[in-house]
Amino acid sequence: MALVTESGLVPAGNPDHLETWNSSKWFKYPIAGRSGFAAGEYEGWHGGYNTQWVNEDPDRVAPLDALRTLEKEGFIATLHDYYYVTTGNMASIATMERIGAEIAQDLKAAAVGAVLLTAT
Image 1 (cartoon, rainbow, N blue to C red):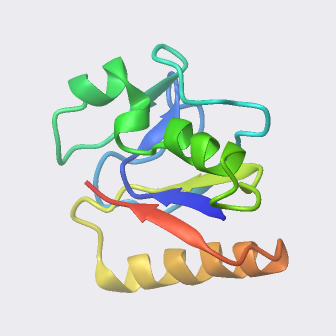
Image 2: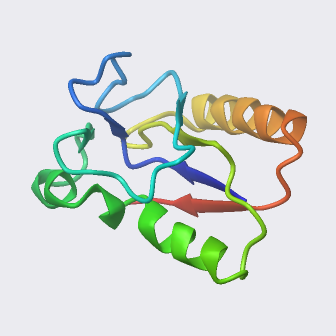
């Protein structure tokens, strides 16, 4: 299973410059060995909601902590070593279709069989 989100959850400081609205790109970041997203290490970078609550607990928009619990309990076999992120706020349908197809292609190449997609 993989975790995909349009919440704009990125490493602190937004090192790859994800747009807060009208996004034209997506990123994947490693989560292997992480039990959750730590406040201060990840932040919401999104212009369509108040990111204060996400910055306090990043797992609110991308529940890595809950997925790790499900993995440990055997409800899911394994969690993909990366999570995927974009910002859906004010983005064009054509751009989101392209982004979705590119992420799907990457997931298919990694033999991922299921996805949890979180949205804001």
